[in-house]
Length: 207
Image (cartoon, rainbow, N blue to C red; front, side, top):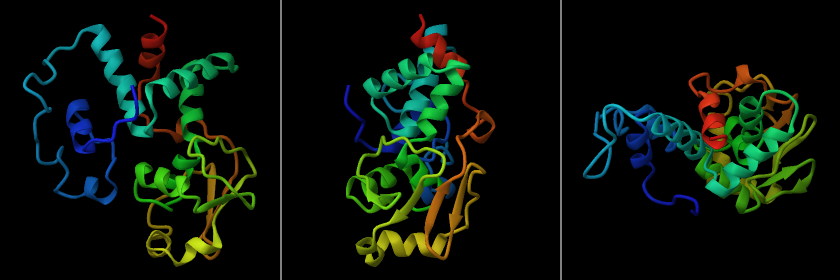
């Protein structure tokens, strides 16, 4: 199955919680969850999910949050299995290290979807080299900056206006004057959404 390109509000309604897929709109009364709208479709989720349904929903929640396809999600899981440590935590750390997520975390984009588009269009440099692959995994010491040609665009001007408004994860740093970010270390589980139950994802793929 390819990446979902439909209205993202439906995703939050289907999952039943905010995934912050639309930037500022998610913090406003216009948010579909804030409006209390029901899940989409003729037959929304039943009140009581099966064990499989619970695990599936958690996997889908994480997949849609980071904007990855099912094939990518499974590939990240296989990578996480081969890494030392807990598979579930490794999976989340890999997803956090994606370049589009780092661009979003630094406040250079209002949503991961916008961050992915900006990366695809070649607006960012990693250690001085253009990288247009959203799935690129950053490493400690990497410096993420805007291309000089991109500094005349609206997304850059918007990022400058909002620089520092949102908290920056402790594994990243932001130089607001240069508008560049640095990866200080690999993210830890405590730096990632505590509401994610990664053990359910492990159980889903291990069934």
